[in-house]
Length: 148
Image (cartoon, rainbow, N blue to C red):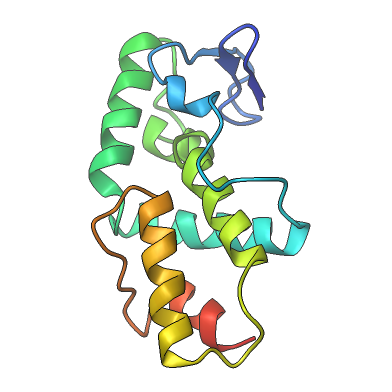
């Protein structure tokens, strides 16, 4: 999906031309707290960040900026049949998806105590460079934390 050497990426299978990702260097640099995550955590993280992206939650401004930089650098991204906001979604959320997946791999054993919940959310907010992270009880992330 991403080639750091050539600073190019693929948005999705419907758009085979590579995208110039030079204006979005965070896509290729190491992410704080991120490491190789398990498939289960990566799937959960991808589902959670997709939901956050689609519902404009938590990281919306950062992701909108990333989308704007990608579309400015790649005017050839087609807007039909789907908009760049949709076709580039996985690429736009990639750094945070990796960070979240690594954090999910390090969750303490279930059930989490209130201090463990608080500590986990504070550490994750720091890794995501957010002032705080307080998911609502209908948030898929909340469900992942408590329905294990």
